[in-house]
Image 1 (cartoon, rainbow, N blue to C red):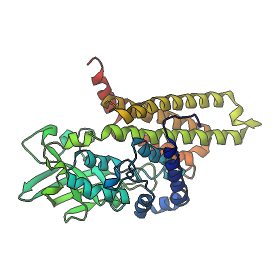
Image 2 (cartoon, rainbow, N blue to C red):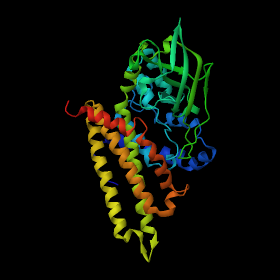
Image 3 (cartoon, helix red, strand yellow):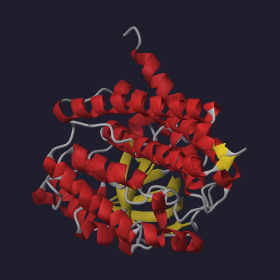
Image 4 (tube, one colour):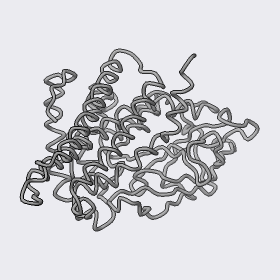
Length: 384
């Protein structure tokens, strides 16, 4: 929407040019072919790593880009502005799992894994959700029983992003069966090449794109003790939550960029489309709907940029990130609905870019915590 933003330095703008060029040349021309195949290629991670798109905020001594949170935001925003990635689901977004390791792992774990993330040689995701539970991670049934120098892991994790390409999964498991709720949970760094690990085929979702979320199965998988995250048991849920605030802000940046992309596509469409002898843009109904959309996006942009500015100098609160996640994901649904409506029948055609943006947006009210869970978190902060 071209409103000036004073968040970014000249170096940030140069980085954005690199990111945008990558998406335009390495993704957009191939996205439809990937969709027909039902999956995008593993090699795209290495290509992204080669130009510095992966782990841009990690210190250079760990193989990262040495940047800040805004470098991650830029990758996420350009993801949202790229028409080819609407159907790729998580795509390059592995930062939640890497930041969990960065914030809570041992020094050896950080030095081993972070450079591999940054180069694209390793794709890793967090495995939390189980078939019987989603938001209630404390009810995890997956178990990891210690036997000498390893844990024996059994259970199932579903809705694991990028599962087909995953080399490692951070698995939330119950290492102490005597402890109920979150206290008995730990995280294990599980090599997907381990005997006893299997994965489902990619799930077919409403997006019908080239993403590859799936279900992981663990049948007596032996995990070395040194793959216990941070070397401590019973801290698994807390370890995951250390990175959730940042993840929500970064993902919300992508969703807001998707809204801006949808708005631009819709304005272009109603300028060209004619009905009853005039442009669709010339109808007052169209103008009012677009005014609502522009206002919603501008309000969301101001709120999120303020939180990003604060996050550069201090920690945003759990409630802050919950409000950002709640507002922008819910707003995205409203924006996409209006934009699809103004496209008419073209808005629901699978080959239409707005259709992909619309269908892919729906999961964002569920992803990284449902809207209901965000409301609970916000409500707890009221009056305390």
